[in-house]
Length: 283
Image (tube, rainbow, N blue to C red):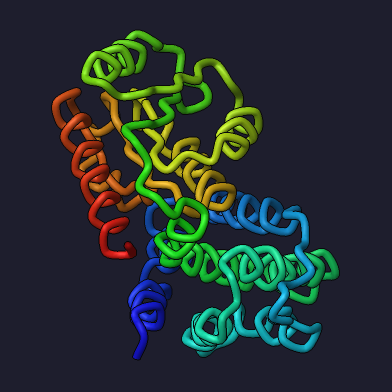
C-alpha cells in the first residue's frame, strides 16, 4: 500500500468516534436546541461553500454519488459515509474537490431534505456530526495539500464572542511575540465576523480565549464553525474557563487546552514541532 493510502486510511480510521463525541453524543452535556444549532452551523456553512467542478483527471462525483453520500450520512450503518469518502480520496480525488465537490454537495442535499421535512432533527444532528467527524479526521490531508511546507511560528489569537476581558489574551499574544512568534490578534468580533475573518486567513493554528463556563456553547459553536471553514486548523483553548471544567477539551473539541501561559506556549511549540516532523516525512 502506498504512503498516501496509509495516510488516508489512518486519518479516516476513527471518524465515527469523533463524530459521536462532537455532535451525536453531546446530548448528555448539551440540550437538543444546542445540538440543533451546532448541526445547523455545520450544514449551512458547508452548503455555502463554492462548488468546484472537478479536476484534470476527471475525478468529479456525479449526482448519484452525491446522493449516496447524503443517504450514508443518516444511514443506520455509521460506517458507510466514511468508506465512501475514503474510497474517493484513495481514487485520487484532491482534498479540495473532495470537500467542495463531494462533501459540500452532499451536505447541501442534506439541508434541502431537512427543509422539505424529509429528515428529522435527530437525522440532521447525526448527519452533521458524521460529516464534521470526517472533516476532522481528514485534517492532515487538507494540511498537506494546502500547506505543502511546514508553517512558521504563526498563529491567530482571538476572544470567544461575548468575552469582555481582553487583558489576558493580549498579554499572551505579546509574550509569544517576544519569543519570536507571529501572532495575529482579533478582538471584539461577533461570531460570524470572527469566523469570516479567520476563514479568510486560513491559519494552521488558532488560540481562543474564554473566561467562564457560561461561554462553553459559544466556544463549541465557534470551534465547529472554524473547523468547517479551515479544515486544516489546530485549535488551542486557554483562559480561566480551562480550570473550571476538566472535560472542556472533549466537550468543545479543542486540540489542546491551557490554563496558564506556560502551558499554552508549550502546547503551541509541541504542535509546531509536529508540523515540522510531518513536513519532513512528506519530503
